Length: 376
Image (cartoon, rainbow, N blue to C red):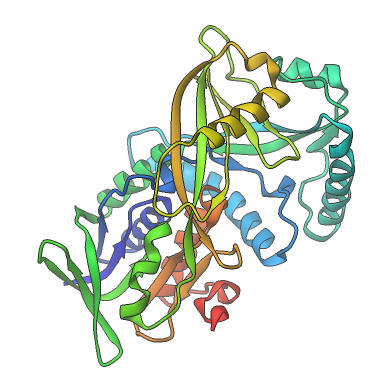
């Protein structure tokens, strides 16, 4: 018998499990390691203050809290387990290369100024505009820019590494993990009792958290609640720059929805497609690879001689309104959701896990805006 069972071991589920175990809650994490899990593919940009998302103040405020929590959690994990966390601070350049991007660049600049006044983010002094020559000094492979804004307070995370650190630290606090396929969430008289698995095993618990990413919707019929989350395929290409030292290069964000993320091991991630209606098919496509490489070379033509080292596919859990789905469901007492983060799961995931864990324990968790009740 467990206090809580987490279904799903991506970065969100791992965070819920870690935070509960750290607080002394008897916790079991069950994961089946699906191919195409978003955590295993994402590029890991953490920079909500310069995000292009403008529609939701709720998302932005959650993202600010999430980014601010990362350094605290990172330091804690360094103390509680022996491995690397994969988290590091870095700079970010937002660039406009063509005339049709200038209006969006100016609109983003105006939005940033408004956010500074309301949220004090980005912090004063962390954003500056650079000339084309100054920008190319920081990112030598960059095309000539017409506008460029540098942000000094961004971060990046290797999601696989950070998730593994969460699980190692969680196990140090008593977290248990098993590899199983959860097929049903059991409940009686409207109260959860545990989970059933494909091999016939059952596990009892007072609370169950569905953190199944793009696969979370599988439980909606048995729970009697709509969980409008679908897979959005993202194709991300990793380039090997060989003898080129990319450790100090900043992240690049352009205004056509793509990015370039350098890493210290001469590796650069470029992406990503956002394919709605892709289904549960974690595969590369000619169109997707062409889209990613074409945009990467438009923004950074100096990467033309890099080697294509790996193509990663992630099925992001995209909710109907593109906001996370967090907290208890109305139909079965003791069942909570932690899913629906879409393309921002690595940015929001560790903090979302914390607030869901807090809510389970009756602590203050201001996540009403993200309740599944909004879809009723």
